[in-house]
Image 1 (tube, helix red, strand yellow):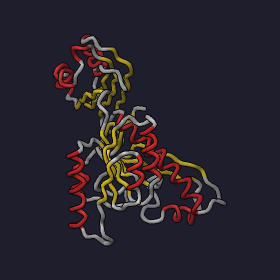
Image 2 (cartoon, rainbow, N blue to C red):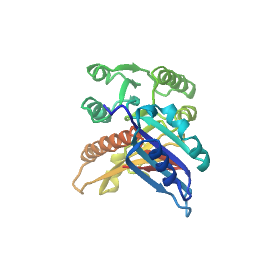
Image 3 (cartoon, rainbow, N blue to C red):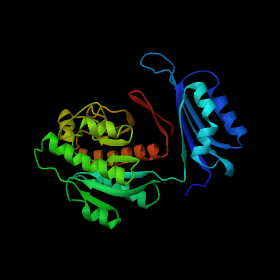
Length: 294
């Protein structure tokens, strides 16, 4: 459990002089103790946004130990620099909904990390379009919601199923949806509703080998690196802002099954990192990219 008066401040604004001084000075004057501070300026150039990003982990005195009070305290600085700034109490554990289809390696990995205390979240529910992992969910004491989709389901049927997921997100006050190998293409409406609050794991070091049987495609091409990419979900399939990527080296003697096994290990690690960094408020959106304070 986090100490009761610790907070994370994340902010983004146009890059200019005096931001760090103003933010840290205000926290100091208010009696706060800065425990960690990271910042990044995306200086205008080829493809850059000209924005400044900052993450501050600090301890507040008892009289300031709630988000609403800190928000009011920060009003002038926010207005002065045109900031998007948010305070997060570290005692509030993000609520995460996991979604899975028939490949359970990422689901199993996340559940283990959660149960062993490595992932500081609450997981009130698991959603699947199959019943394969109902018993696994039950073994962890997590509600399992089977929301089936018939083979060849049309857009209207898929949208009706998505609306049931949206209702569950609302009812369970979900902060983050994790597609732990949930193998369905999501509608634009669903993606927009969960913008910045849904993470997917792609079984490829994007861009490359999209579509079915990616490891067989990779084997056919004789690749020497197997990778995975965790990214935010958008309506553009597998094109969302990338949070984390990693690779493992393979050789000419590796079979397609060998590549699949290696790839699944990489997927687990990459997805777990992305989820942990998100819930620790280390990921900030920067246009089509992300800033990740590790």
